[in-house]
Length: 71
Image (tube, rainbow, N blue to C red; front, top):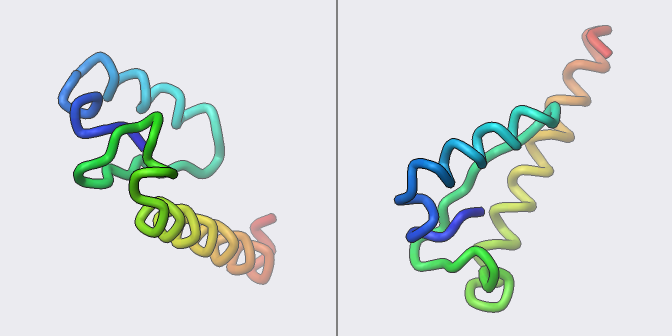
């Protein structure tokens, strides 16, 4: 979850994109008004909800893939 300032920097966006390709499931979330290092203290509800929604989608994708024999 990069901060607004970080997200404005093309090098940061490129790095985040490269790191996200190292895992099977990833999502880049920009929470307006956040600072990366402090997002959990600054905006705990928004950060927690973003993570929960992501985890829920990953679990749902795994369940669908498993039930269709893709895993």
